[in-house]
Image (cartoon, rainbow over all chains, first blue to last red; front, side, top):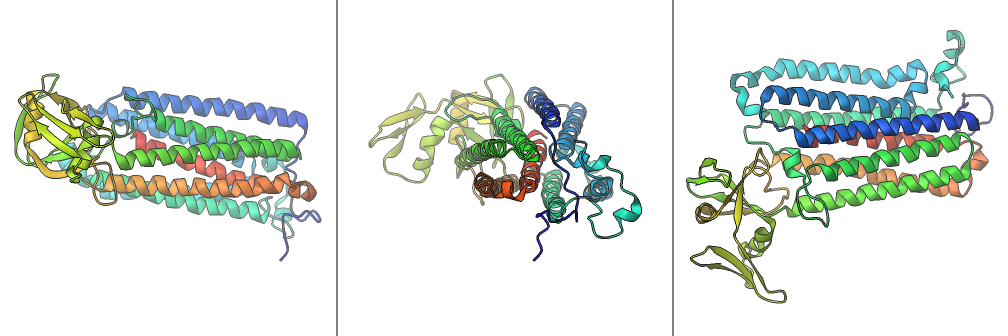
Length: 125
Length: 326
């Protein structure tokens, strides 16, 4: 079987090499993102400890804050740590498009199937 | 670096054959596709969790009540341990980024150093998860169900009307002896007096524990402690139905079993990913150390396993939010 991880000619681009100065820049960026991820996690934990789930409305707001912070963290991990932000647009779309469909499907199913709980809302939060 | 996104290739050349239109190797592209499908598996599990939780009529335990213990330390520290696990995984993800970066400079000693630290971080996470599972399975005190309706006043003055089948929680000192007593071990016996109830253990380490207080709503919402005569009222109304910790059939955390089963399945499935990630990291570590990639003149293999390792971190970010926080 032919191996594609051996560079025998220019059959695919492997120009992922970079110089010492570029490396220093990438490392600085990595530590910056580390700081952001740690900060966001700390905020989540403090919110989780501090806020009680007594009032349905404010808890809904907190829940959405958790979800938004999680998506921000996920975006940093995927785009910076996994370098998807540095890849070609078509690969980005190939990876992210299935999730657009998945999320659209989830919203559809939650909205169409999710109204059952409105009859006795208090039982379900 | 800027990567492939900055490179301009005309459409005719890009799709003309002879090179990857994504400008990535076959192996890296397939790793991405594998991660896409694996993420959908986790997405399915978390979605199932959400739907089962939303449709459950029984109370659902909340994270900061169920997970608030630390190893070796007494007291309550809600979510701190899980936050620590999250931090360990983030740090090991960072060392992996640095290993990949060192690979791009063909810096063998850098790759070996950072990959080694990543593996250590992975072991730390696995160890933490083993402790958490063990703690979850053993529980913290256990519970018993009431056999009749009781009305009690808690220490902070609230009145509770409890019905048959409601759960009452013991503290972990009392529960520690209650478990062998329920199982009928001859060395542990129950002694009742005018002052209250105590469990006495004879044998190699003789000691006794008095029933000081019992807890209501331990994992559901604001818990309440009941002590003195009211605690005795609860104790005397107990049924035969005790549960300690959790297994696949009963658990002390909730009246339904779904919560415990989702805990085992989701964190277990994630933990298995971490375990296989550590194994793969060790294999690549050995290859890097022996100079395989140096001879190959590129460290793309580190990049590929790096993708998998970051994915494991990514999944944990979602598990942390949807299982522990919300």
